[in-house]
Amino acid sequence: MSYSLEQLKRDGVPKLLNGITDRAGWETKRQTIRQRWLDFIGGLPPSVPLKYEVLSETEEERHVRLHLRYDTLDGDTVTAFLLVPKKNAAGKLPAIMALHPTANEGKVDTATPQGRHNRRYGADLADRGYVVLAPDTITAGERVYEGASPYQTAPFYERYPEWTAVAKMLADHRQGVDLLVSLDYVDEDRIGAIGHSLGGYNAIFLAGVDERIRAVVSSCGFATFTGDPNPNRWGRRDWFTHIPAVTDFLAQGSVPFEWHEIAALAAPTPLFNWSGQADKIFPHWEPIAEAMRDLHALYDWLGVPERMFSFDGTSAHDFPAPVQAAAYHFLDMWLNRVERHGEG
Image 1 (cartoon, rainbow, N blue to C red):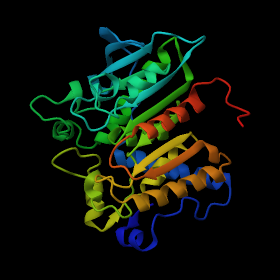
Image 2: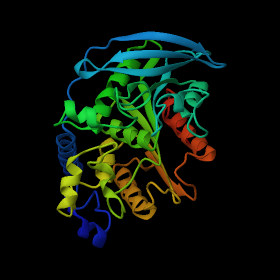
Image 3: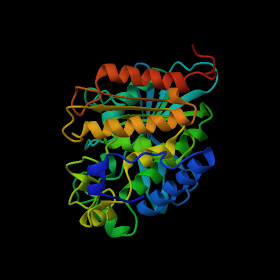
Image 4: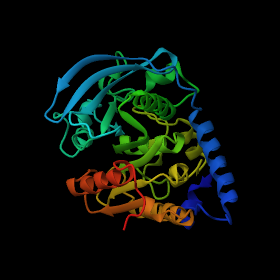
């Protein structure tokens, strides 16, 4: 699965279906990718038994916001907001993991009126009738390490030198899904994930390792190694270090995989992707679009082309209102109706 940077520069994004002739062949490749990914990020230990406490409650116009703390691996806890619509439809409700972008405030950015413009997607979806869990990731919100600045992962790696921040975030997010499915007013078959930037790729990664995620939206959260002017954004840094071993591969002129292979772990889960052509963080929009086209070819080959929608536009690293509206409609289409067949 590894590729030389020269190979990617010469040939472009590798094709997911190269050499694949049938479903069994794809499933074998998918399992190989999955095992490679889990090994590379240091593995995902089993979840711990669910335990949470409500710290406070706030009334908003159309939903109630609960401030929670719940257990996660190795004695750690996750702080989060749980948004519950006031007007409950008949039966159980769909739910969303709303994963925040790189904001020092963490969950506040997505789940409260104080969040930034075009980042309040958690609150928006609660007002649309979804139960929303908006957790803090490690290093953000209420989970900044003592004595460190937001998004400083050095204390994490001092404690877990053989693990990765990516795996830690995924483990914590799976605990959040455990919490959602435990709620008697949540439909465990209608849980999705949404995020922008950091939250966007976390949403894709989560869908790839947790089949309980039935639809995913990523805004400006997908990138490729191909064409990336700064591929070590994923490796060892003084700031937020995602996967240290990426740096070791880059030093040898290679990468351990291409990112659309990791996104393919979620297929055939419905996936909505948005990328900005003027995105200064992920500026290489053309290979990103190429990877999305190849990923859609996989969905088409699997017989579900309608489950993937990806587009790019002229905006910067943002989640513009028209794109949010389209993303919310996508989630409604796959999560907000019990019957989703026979659509014209």
